Amino acid sequence: MIIKSFELNKKKLDNYKYFLFYGENEGYKEESLISITKNKKNINHYLENEILDNEDKFLESLISRSFFDNEKIIVIKKASEKIFKIIEEIIKKKLEDISIIILAGELTKKSKLRSLFEKENSLICSAFYSDNYQSLSFIVNDFLKDKKILLSREITNLLIERCNGSRLHLKNELIKIENFAFNKNKITYEDIHKLTNLSDNYHMSELVDNCLAKNRGKLMKIINENNFSNEEVVSILRIFLYKSKRLYALKKQCDDKNIESVISSFKPPIFWKDKEIIKQQLNSWTLKKIRFLLIEINKTEVLIKKNFALSLKILLDFIFTQTNTINN
Image 1 (cartoon, rainbow, N blue to C red):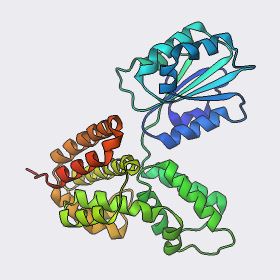
Image 2 (image 1 turned 90 degrees about the horizontal axis):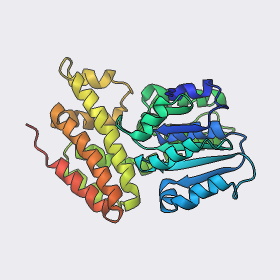
Image 3 (image 1 turned 90 degrees about the vertical axis):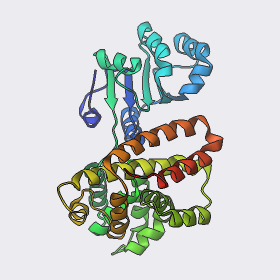
């Protein structure tokens, strides 16, 4: 049964035992997981590969109940289509003392796992799509109102912009601000910049911006001055995806309006310091090439996940290829 992610908190879910949360919004999935398992005991966390590597042992432990005393909750993270047969087998056995919550990445309409959860009324299936400016603004404003913290519109827009669509990252930064704001009457832009990870993220964001603006000289300077690691590659690629989607949305509007007007009226608001480089990006890309870029970003992420040891090299090859792309 399909339930929209924002409706989960409104539904009485006590009678449901099986949940599938899929999509790219990791922060939102974690929030929903915490909400469902609140005040619950005997929660057991697994990664999909741990189950696949020890499938018989995992199934035996569920059926025999030898590892559990009471009702238990099984949380399976980083799940994919590979776990379908195991989950199908467990559901058919109708084990009353077990609840299973699956956190999966992207699942297509052809996914057997997704189809199973969507069609059965006894199962819950929710998609967790990327946050937009409105949803992130709501998170910020709701948090600040609850904590009685005053921030300027410029600062809140900057926080949303620099979190690159990640509510998990945004909430981490808001918690830092809450701790810092204790007994303070005013928080400045400089305070925020020093306090949060904006300065760390800035180098990644600057790298992406200059690639999209095809500023090869500036790009080389950023790469040489920052010792980017394999661990940072996925974060950089996510920033690429976020900014490329924004560039596509901006470019689509440029047919009817001039660039200045498009940038000024865009939502989420573009931070004033970023306006010039976004103009360069808009002048450097066609809609057709941006669509191709989005496909290449997804391909690159798949390649990186398969070859983590080479992830930085793969990313840099991707960056230089895009910087040299000629639009025609």
